Image (cartoon, rainbow, N blue to C red; front, top):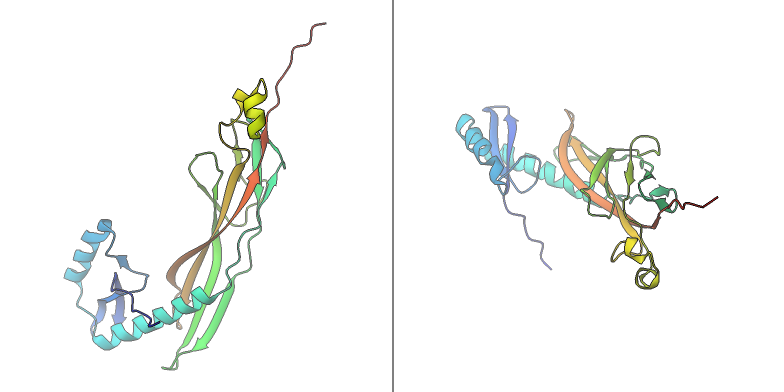
Length: 223
């Protein structure tokens, strides 16, 4: 199978030693994504304010970015191993999430032009879809049980036979025997060749956990 070259999608700025600040098109981020109409004005303004980069500058920068992307994608980016407390949730009481932050990954290699390429990947944010239709929430990594990563469920979950046959089955979620909690690591890649770190983009790795939720109902007992 022959590899295809990605389309020129991102408007990137660079600093050419001759013309100074300039722009060029690249198939790789970072840059202004031309497929997002919200960037139209910024793309027009950039192309109006700056000259196009010389072919050599654009080619060298694009090659460096593509190499950094390949390194970033080759990293063994781990998935989260979340823990939920309590193991069985209680309606209207918070379910707490804990997940460790993996170690940052890095790679150094010497490019053909003699520059040292450094690529780094780190988890900066953890996204949680609690599985009950509420919007996914983001938390800084790592996520500890006491730093706000919590969610209260309002409806308990039950097996299908309980929902159908038990007198209180109507109080259960109509379809779920357990909530599917999806936890996602947002791995952020950066690279540099001797200067400041440049953002590459992000790659997500996810894991799911089933979370049963019960309820506690007070019962009045006559004296």
